[in-house]
Amino acid sequence: MALDVVKKESSFQAWVEHPASHIVHHDARCCEEARMWFLGYARSMQISALSRYELRAPTWLSQLFTWGPSAWPIAWCELVKMKTLDCGVFAALAREAFTAQGFEAHPAQALLSFNPTCTTHWKGLWKKPPKNPLPEPLKDQKKEKTHATFPWIGNEVVYHELCVLEMEGNQAKFYDSTWGNWFTPDQETGFGALLALRTECPRLLHWGDKIFSYGEWIDL
Ligand SMILES: [Zn+2]
Image 1: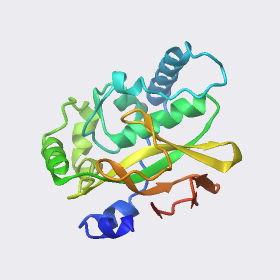
Image 2: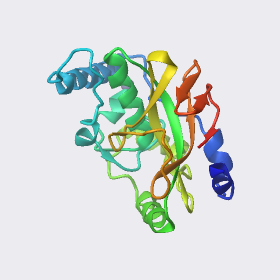
Image 3: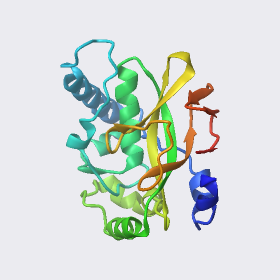
Image 4: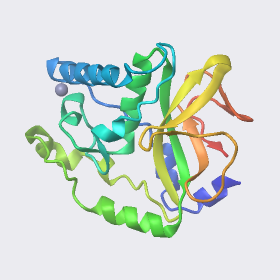
């Protein structure tokens, strides 16, 4: 059982209790303009697709932003100024891009298997302060921003945020918004293998021989 590996990790409880990340909207022009800019950009990146109804993964996200530590919570008007964003923001942006195409996209979280060489390297990377110059209001709130220090890296397990699409016949499609690839339900083992998945889709989803209900971690 994959979850047995995960349970040995000291951050197990923190991972399984962590809600999926959402972008803050200030309910004001600042965020509305930032979101409109993003959606316009998404449209321009997807315009060359063959068919209007074709599912187009927002692989261009990684050209717009680099993956790395970013402060939480984060608002639309703040993230558009950033160069570096974490997987939670990548996932939230991918949901927007898919939703704009007319697909049902929901948050998903994953626990992945990695070797200690990798996890040690990431722990070092995450200890460095974020490269983004924080805008003034953010500096004041910095102490309250806890997500950047969320213990997402274990010894052999890594917490990650994804995007799940609700396809025809309640079939799930899991997209890694940070690295721009789709996951397949046939179990792969080793480097980067999925150990467990959780979705925030309000309906039941099927993926291979697994069934996902809202908020439930599924052992793979
Ligand atoms: Zn704003």
